[in-house]
Image (cartoon, rainbow, N blue to C red):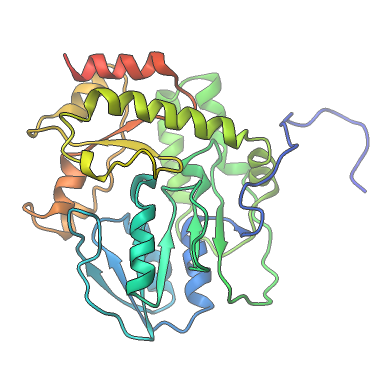
Length: 317
């Protein structure tokens, strides 16, 4: 029995689901990958050059050898075959690569899908799959993992209390005023042991209106695409009929311009996926272009047609 009476706790609309209710809820996306690898028999894994360097953390921790692979312009791995005791990690980039996963599941036996950028894409064909909800919602941590092979370990429950400072500050002060705390939270997630998702993160996620947020993202994406599709050099990867819910709008201008820095002048902040990639690959590679030239425009549920048109006006100045 919980305590009765006393002061009021933080009021959160805790009435819904976690969306991935059938998944195991852990404390981070990278620990979801660790869980998959820990409960598999892989002794080697292929990982894309175009990925965040934190993905190496569980691989190195478990002592699994790894090889980087390149992707072609359709975002498919440039690998012919993998052995039975090897795995291939594939990222569902920007939430736009669902059809690629279908192709890969036919070609390779042992694939692991990183759906960190595709929260709404459901697991396919019993493929080990993991998610990172903080890429889509206002939480500081957490991850979901689907894996047929499980263990009987009784993991501790994580505590998120000290990781929410940037989220609270962004409301009471500003996003700019909480950026240092945001980076600190990123650092605090490094080398965390596998734990169950915290009660606080679960409570917030059960208060999310998932369908409403999905529809807003899709609508914002379509607004940008309607105007930018003629100049976007990545238009060929966008099929509006196949998108469940995108994370961002990837925009590759016809020629290299410092658009990301220009947008900052108008307080439009775009992520760079991922700075570490430029240390791993040559300047002529497709991955380098994706990191250095592509601008990933925000389309999430915080914004409406008004903000999309404002961004478009700033891009076209």
